[in-house]
Image (cartoon, rainbow, N blue to C red; front, side):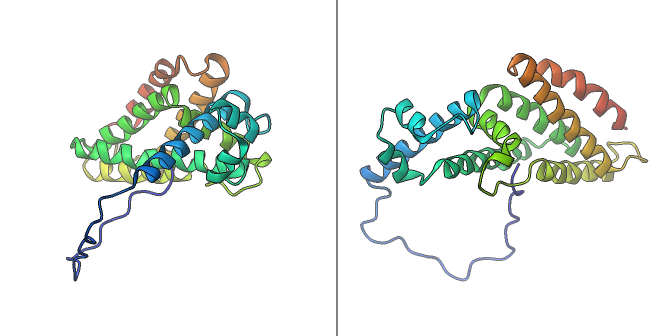
Length: 220
């Protein structure tokens, strides 16, 4: 997970920017370019997931989307840029997921559980998530700066469990930060084992096996 959603600034903006006359949004060429860039990213994610960073080339990506290498380079200057884009798209998913869960009005403890439940589904079904996870494991072989894994997940869960403690949802003696670290270790260790043994086909069942005792241990 990347950075947590920004907190809106208090107050009202001092002015309103009027739209430019005649502006009608992206042009057809811009739309086409955006679609092409997305296709390239998905193709790269599929190849990174299947073959890893070292065994994927820009040529492989170009062949998968039936483009020239030059067309791929137009959107991404090198393989490292593709890897960074995949990981950034992975981390961009989690704040969106959190916003959806908060909009459902869940309690903090239920929101923490729902975040991890839905993350398990994403690891099973979403190639961007799968590719991002593999790229993070292969970060020593990628000559680019990637966001550190696990840190933002731990911060988010600490925040939710702290709120849950204030609401009396978890046991009085529970340390929210320690519980968050245990949940992160349990979840990401579980998903890695599921990937290695079953290509994450059993991740939902495996997560339930880890989830239930962890949450029962802290629930008030």
